[in-house]
Image (cartoon, rainbow, N blue to C red; front, side, top):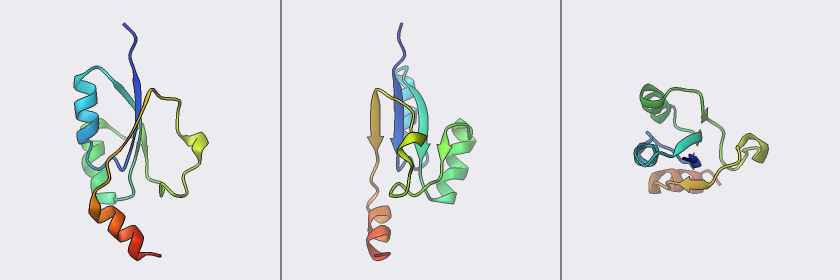
Length: 85
């Protein structure tokens, strides 16, 4: 059986990944800036695919080829980015 690959942006603590993996998806990339979320994410899934870059400055070559790209947009992350302008 072919396994689908996913990348998640604004990954948070990994709730999207949890759901995807339950459906046999392989998450090969995770991105989020918040160091508190990184601690929880890595405790559950490891650090192998974590990328802490600002999504606006992320090099597209750093993102592997995937079948699905997800983005969980918590309003506080967007609000903080807007305030930084």
